View 1 (cartoon, rainbow, N blue to C red):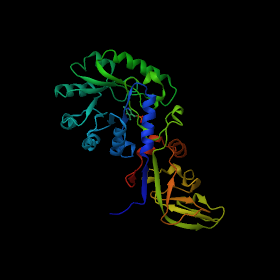
View 2: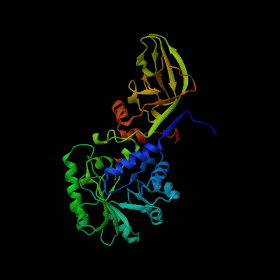
View 3: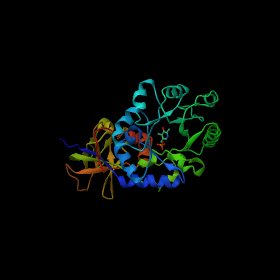
View 4: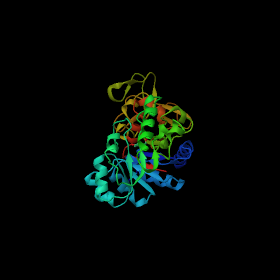
Length: 342
Ligand SMILES: *Cc1c(COP(=O)(O)O)cnc(C)c1O
């Protein structure tokens, strides 16, 4: 067994704290968890087991491949957002998860196969996935047992008139469909308040430390902590340059540490000259360009040696501002070269 020089420390207590906070903000609605894209890069199995133990009962993935990978966990309610293609039917009918039907074709496919209870996505103005008013009027859902009727907000992270418009359309359309539960809010939707939580909420980002709206700042805490090992410590003499394209030139003699971490691990080039690592309470600035597998950190005056581990700053709102990437991209960009611990 070899040991990786890059690890992702995952804080299970922070994950549970975030879920409980979102559950509290969801009021009487059940609070689920979106764990697609391998739990936003943290590991879907780890997220699901941690949150199931805390009482979460509703989990959402995007695809049947993701559902199949989680089947051994026997999660109480696992739903597949992308619904059912022909190619999915065998797996879908095996009962490992419940499809979220998005089109009249998917609804007919499920009905003709005698698939049983399903979820349904309505399009209320995002024009991404979901059935429209015309589909309902044409009887697309006739004969189906609908567990959860849902829609998705396009602009919940903004104070946009679209939020109220989508909510209004959702209520009007839901009036025409018999369903056990209604569900509209993602993480940002929960922060819009009790008008948006209905019977079930579906947070993803905020579970993992993302802060999509100011109301969640101070409520949500960091879950994912990248830590990289020092491969070399060196002295850079005043006037010498560091890294690709020599974008950083030492103003004075500088001690630097080269870490095993780069843009192939989701530490994108936008962090060049902006990111930082932590040593206790000290912030050690990143210097020069981010390479594919390496970064350079200014460790002047600090006791950092080859083989040491440094914690690279990955506070999501700050990291998004520094890198120009979204908090979602930063999480899902966490690569396969981490040893995920915790
Ligand atoms: C990904 C997703 C969510 C979770 O959204 P966040 O913004 O990460 O909270 C909820 N619902 C649907 C349909 C999704 O695709």
